Image (cartoon, rainbow, N blue to C red; front, top):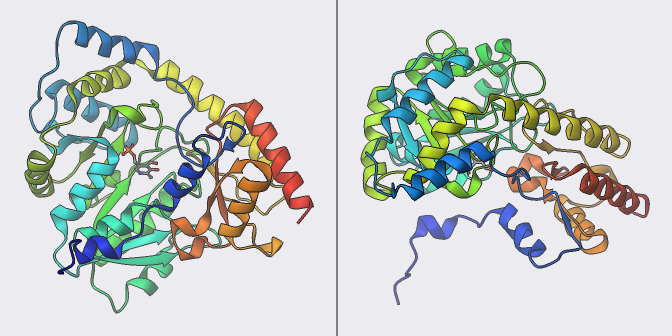
Length: 381
Ligand code: PLP
């Protein structure tokens, strides 16, 4: 019988995060530092706008691009990260997940290389493969920064078309300064690369200020910005995000989006308008709370492991290799013996081996219990 499943799909592995998520389901004793899901409710004023729109029966499709008012708001909002765009440069997507898929499918020909500094968010590599490209991992451990020299070393001998950046980073929490971004920009310009910049954690920056790489000289015409509402506004279930891109790439992405998605859900788009218009004080409160948790959690973790203080997002990525267990063994035993779920670092690329990812998007009370349990677990190893 001929194989029913495509070779491309057959070649990719299911997400290493989901596996741990499934293990935790139905176990109320477990504290999950596994999945990057905010524990705040969506700010009330956003929910209220969505409820009003449903009461008015606003439930239709929108244009493929997304609601004009939302695209205008996105353009206005992105000025704070140094980017001057037009509403025509924006497509509203069903989350950043769709944005990643769209851009890779829009730009890649079979065999085109995509540079992926690792540890990296789990979807870049498989979506590159599904789009027919070749993922080229660049290990950035131990300091998690893709420097000009490092990038050049790995790009040599391959023919990359694009590089994926994600800062603040999932899973390391690392962000980049203007100088570091300029180095990456120099590299991208020299190799004539498209930069795919996943800025979903931009609002959750605690050290320094988020700068979009698109705002640097010569970068606007080669950068595809991805952002969304899942993290800062906790709108994970609404599936809403956006891309800002040069016009030729927008046109190409729109062709795919109009056939595979048509448009993002209108209720979520209405909520997103309110998020950008009226949630500055909620954002400040949420950011301050995550920062409080980061400070507490990382201080405690640093007594147990070597760990870098994250600049943003809500993940800590401690090094656990001195305990003689692989990342998977460590995560599995911590879950089974102490009821704390974390994600093994190798889920984010080979160079993540020897680390674990802990999401601190849970209450202080739970964080305290979790870190006590981790300490106890390690003491008995
Ligand atoms: N990009 C990064 C770096 C993420 O961490 C996540 C979710 O964890 C996503 C994209 C997916 O976001 P969305 O919910 O907008 O699809």
